[in-house]
Image (cartoon, rainbow, N blue to C red):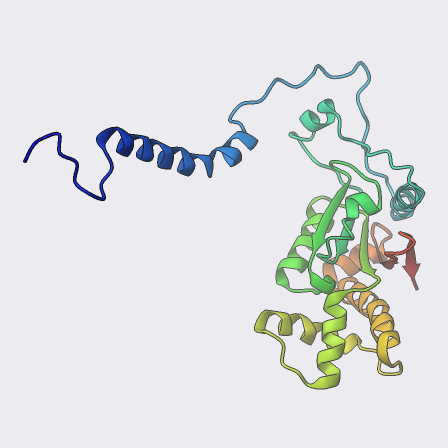
Length: 251
């Protein structure tokens, strides 16, 4: 066969090379955007300011609550400060952290504690689970903040239109078996269901009841109870409104 004869249905060597090169570029293209988004090296941080940015934690549970309340006021009135984000503070936080509050909240994407309370790096220890459900990992995370970091405040933050609570209430009403891991959440929310209410009012009341029950369960933990008794710690329940962005304490 003549070496110049082209076999039908095959690409010429030059065309084949172009196709292989294009395929390689396409494969690389699926990786490059991610790799370039997180470069291996970054520009050096700016020099620290003349005065160090302060993010010292308060000395009492009451002051911690005031600080959260002030931050929520800024958030809901669109006066956010986005504090404690400077290059100097980022460097300082590589040495140690001193958060002033633990916020146990829901995983809901609409309720990020650092935004809701207008806090910055090093201010909050956030623990999140669907419906603020307690398990050993959540309890251990809260205990770490209380016992190791000596944080003076634990705030359990429920919120309006909580999907986990709604699923638990509807499963309780219908007897429906939820998917395995979601059923785990519903089983732990069920004791908080307010059967004195109906429809959406039942869901709404259960959101508050569950935040209170979670607070009470945490406060009953022996190591936490001892710190509450001697005034070093407060454990409170609160609720966030999606419509007005306000956080208010639950008695």
